[in-house]
Length: 454
Image 1: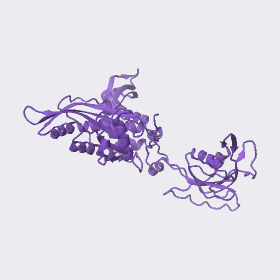
Image 2: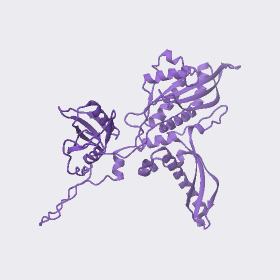
Image 3: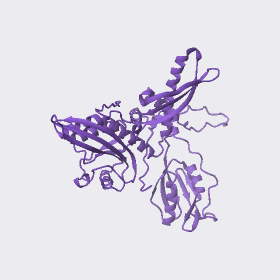
Image 4: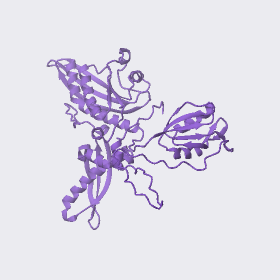
């Protein structure tokens, strides 16, 4: 991803607060007083890597930072490419025997650039169905060329991060004509935007409004002074997740549109950089825990000796609460079958159901296990203080062996014992190594469900 730089014809200083993640940290490293300058430089280099790692630990789950430390380190090398305004605050301090140096550092993290690098290097993913983002200019943003140039830059940024851009050209004139100013909750613009993004099934929106003063120049042509306000929203949720404004910028040209296009040409790199930075912060703060450990799943059939729909519904609800995918299968005249796609094996399901208590209306029930086979568990709804009518198993199911993973070699056969002692061990696949885990999956970001007025 290119490091975008902007040159403004007036008020060229643009605040970077909206596009970066400012932190201050203190670190201690080993120090060699025989090579003072080299030791200080080494400490600064270590501090940059540690600083970036600490930022990731705050944004991502600890599991990712620990398990994928090497991949992250490779993807974000060199660390200074993803740090802005990094500096040592104050004077580094040495301990009494000058064997350790403590530095206090402060800096910003270029989040869009970092996310893109992690996605490109297959360390991070937004999943098979990428998050959909729409750029929507206000009706005051009246230059088609300028609009498309901004969208092209945003498209490049989002594509590198694995997100999907959504076009707005099909928006009906009735909705679009309502977009005339800054977004405020409850405003006409807010209502129109909710209708537009619902039409396109958009996850996030970048709305850009422009305040424009376009007038004839005394020497011919036109002068345009414009400022831009962007707003980050998640549709159907009455929240504004981010907002920022770029300072007044001037452009000139032979026509009004050319003058405005010149302004957009100057500000669009910084506008995109700020808006996409806030978009990523909104996505991370609005997402479920990012995960990376794959879990083997199996389908277990739970046979319930009960046909009462309200009882079956309660059991299905409880099973879904474990993270399983549950569906009602074909039953028999005396039993109902529930298909459960779960990370639990038969033993884990056996233990879970034996310890489960359900309440239907004012009455409490247990669902003790009354039979099992491979990937099958039978239960019976029983009053809380009663015993099931069918006999319970004398012992729990055995621990299920983990299936062999692709590329894993079977254990060599053991010679039989002539005296019948020490029978050959049952082959079990060893647990997956971290390298195998990493090769099977890429961490995902999963958005939380839409919530209204939270």
